[in-house]
Image (cartoon, rainbow, N blue to C red; front, side, top):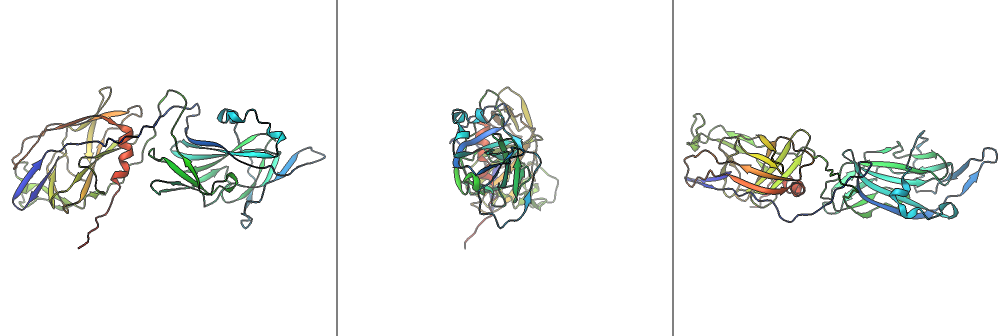
Length: 395
């Protein structure tokens, strides 16, 4: 609940919380390996490197094509590689291709979400028992969200070949899975550009992102704890140094420097889900330089099966106590409510704010709010609306 004060005028307006309606539907299904598949491709076909055979051992070797990284002298020889035994299940269209008889080979790849990371699997079908002078990636590797401009930079590779040329020893015909790890992508991501993997022709390649599994089990990942710019206490009391009295607004606390956001719909909501707690952001338009708010003890979330998730705290502000926030008219402020954790299986919730205790103020309204059928997916997509946005003033 929010209210306002302007000189001697004190007014309270009822809050109608409203979720955004422009929903984006994304299908989640479970793969047998537990990974979210964002995108995959057979990839570009490149000429097979020249293969030489040792007359004595009959082992075959091939030196990989130059990848314009010859100025980097670091070299390594990893002792183990992951072999993708299900390559033809991932790319069934390759089953009828007699690759051993062709002079070109596919540089296939697959982008997945695994264990709160994004993984780019770069597949190499061994043209020989040993491939030398191979190059995977270095500091150029990143995923660029085409809509937001956010860069997700490389974390590591598996095996550890980061910024090094290397050898691969396996069996001719084996498909090697070379992995590049990035931070997790938000579920709102629609398209990324992939940089820094020249052998797989990814130097800015645009990739539409889909979140699609094959099965019935729903899977949704956890979020990171949202970054909240917590307000600071400006005055312990508005004007009278007395114990807090709900009926006397002169005794209420005054806060300032609240979490500012870009203009949004009054009462807009967003949600972050972590294993320890659920965070719900509520946004408000500030119509006056000083307004008051009230977050009530009985506020809760209810899932589709009737389970309730209690309000634990509101970050940086009192709970079950009226207080003022001082700012500018035209500000948009947000508060972050912390509830009990939601299970991953929950897809919709109801937000309940109970009726409040009556208090004496002009135009006071202590009625509660009930907003049902809120999509968790949509609320999580709304996270971007609540990034901190410092006030910009032109006089």
